[in-house]
Image (cartoon, rainbow, N blue to C red; front, side):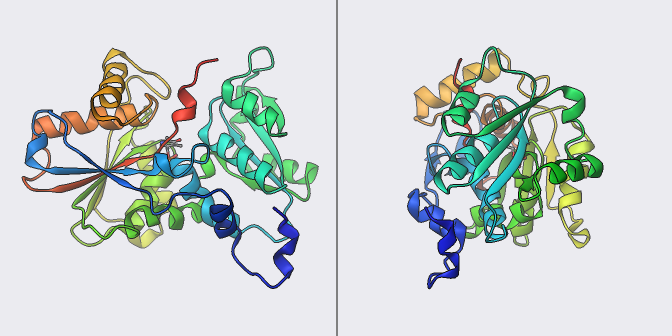
Length: 313
Ligand SMILES: *Cc1c(COP(=O)(O)O)cnc(C)c1O
């Protein structure tokens, strides 16, 4: 796709051109979920299938990138971003850049030169520049001096934060709710950096609540991240983060999570992975059994995608 046509007759935003070119499936479909779990018959559960938006740019990573793309200067030919060796965000960015003739530099935590993950192998195939950095350097990914240095090194590049999590991400995420006709009482979503939860919170109507399921050990910290993304006047009580289901930390799993992923896939035809959705569904199962939701509530469970991350080397 030629981005240089922007000055021509068509002024379609980049996100819209990408959506057409890649046949992105939005609004994403809804799947009714009726598990034989204790308490499940007391409520109705819809799964918002953002995993089906696109095989590569799936889930919340497209939602978060949408308005980030539209905010790029028309002259932008180079994007830089950060992530781990299995990052869904880097995977989405790498593919997007390859499809829009932009250069992509992936700054990756750790050194995978000897055994690239499937995600990294894809980035290489798509022509991305890969920069491996150690933990200490990676920790500086939001520091002003580090970012200035990077910008100096690549003056024409636009730097997107890890996970695509920044202010521009929120409006895209909000569409998960606003593209729905149905009214939901509760929305459930996994929480990594908190941008997806924050975006959903901005779209909540009075009486609606959002529950984030922490996928890492971050009590207090994750709430801080979410509040930081929300404008100050949104300090309300319509949302909460449940910290009981991280399974020991980010990327850590256990038998219960693994078995549940398998059961949800084989029993109900919904593929999920253990890093995010496995924990989300585990939380859902526990909350249903606890009678957490009022009888007759309508729940939306957001399937944020990320299935590529579970591929084995
Ligand atoms: C990145 C990611 C998340 C976490 O989203 P945040 O906005 O960082 O909280 C959840 N699910 C999947 C599949 C992801 O790739």
